[in-house]
Image (cartoon, rainbow, N blue to C red):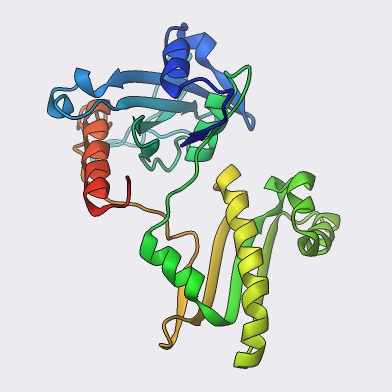
Length: 286
């Protein structure tokens, strides 16, 4: 995580927001309501209290669309009475102030890193925070050394691309404008070549386009839903690289309560710390 000189320490901002009543923590981001739910220090969690201090928090969003129902083997699906409330999904986050890195839980319907960034920035009078995905070093090496490209393929939600974004890529403006004139929202682009000579030409163009599209997803990770290149790596046979799949990720099981089918927030923070600690041991996080 990065921040501009004017932005306060993230710990200070989180503390101020957490001190507010629940209703005052809410911010509207892209027509959806978000709220800081939990805030703790690793010192408060016995399983990780002996490590260097990290900050644990969670951000939730209100689900205003179709919600889940209650099901069992012997009766029909029933509605859940939220008694004036609504379904909500929360994302657990672990922040290490020393390294500046975060470990963020993947939550299918919960806040993603881009929404969390916008939520935190909404409370700032000056400056900004920036949350950028960390990519696997081997993946980055392959992408940077990939050459003689034979194909680039992408799928983009054009409704999420602003005029300001398009100014950074003149070549994309014409095709985006054509899509919008037809009231299109999803844009699929595939460029392929057969010869190595043309592949060398495609290499620079594709790398430029891929870099721009990756930048769009740092603002909102739902904008580009597919981004793949195919080309030679290390003089071997052509290899397909998923440019959206190279983020540093890990899977770890967390128990789910059969009473409410939720994972306890502390269990999620502990899992995030275990993953984060393994990344530090491997040198991915310094």
